[in-house]
Amino acid sequence: MNTESAPTAISVRGLKKSYKDLQVLRGVDLEVNPGEILALLGSNGAGKTTLVRILSTLLTADAGSALVAGFDTATQAHRVRETISLTGQFTAIDPVLSGRENLVLMAQLRHLKNASQHAEELLERFALSDAGDRKAATYSGGMSRRLDIAMSLIGNPRIIFLDEPTTGLDPQARLEVWDTVRRLAADGTTVLLTTQYLDEAEQLADRIAILHRGTIIQNGTLDQLKDLLPPAHVEYVKKQPSLEDVFLALVGAPDQEQP
Ligand SMILES: Nc1ncnc2c1ncn2[C@@H]1O[C@H](COP(=O)(O)OP(=O)(O)OP(=O)(O)O)[C@@H](O)[C@H]1O
Ligand SMILES: [Mg+2]
Image (cartoon, protein in one colour):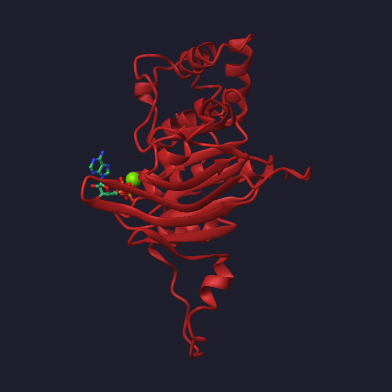
């Protein structure tokens, strides 16, 4: 956790963005504290990716301001880019290269000395050492996502954007990614992730922001959000395991390494 008096990791005020006549963001306000995991929830087309692309300087807003690590995304884009990494909805992995080669390539692109040492450390950290020499095309979904996140960590970004990190993954692979994200936050990295999965937000996030019809309609901890509803009527029922409980009990919890 970052204890120095760092600026708010992400600070968004009155952000607006339209695509021609389609108003997607209509005045978004959002703050994310250093070392926090914020889940941005919203249905398909709510504008999650649009917001993430503005915060990661891939897109410019029409109005309002977005500061990342204190830098203005509009006027200090290169400073923002030095601070962040983005793992998009679609992976950056080259499938014909091995996991190790993908990591080395990324480190070289970032002009890091000791590219192979960085690659080695990340393979170790993401439990991919044994699979490091295999073509990434042979990786399972969970392993690919871990490699993708590992690649985005090269250069030690303080703030990381994960756009739908677990979409399309099976329950075990989702748990692997969740563990990865938790470890990142424990190391002090600020994480903004988008998701359509309520349980993902529930499990991972320190705070949850709900993007709906162009604005953040709610923002708070899970308990704060739950307090918005009237207290539940208490009944004694036998708790049934969820399908996910049953699936994981039958298949087993995720292994560190899945060949
Ligand atoms: N380049 C573009 N040109 C025109 N319209 C766009 C463009 N990019 C996104 N849109 C539209 O803007 C809206 C918001 O899209 P965005 O991708 O930000 O949503 P999202 O919340 O990430 O959705 P999903 O959950 O499907 O990923 C959608 O209606 C989309 O069709
Ligand atoms: Mg999206």
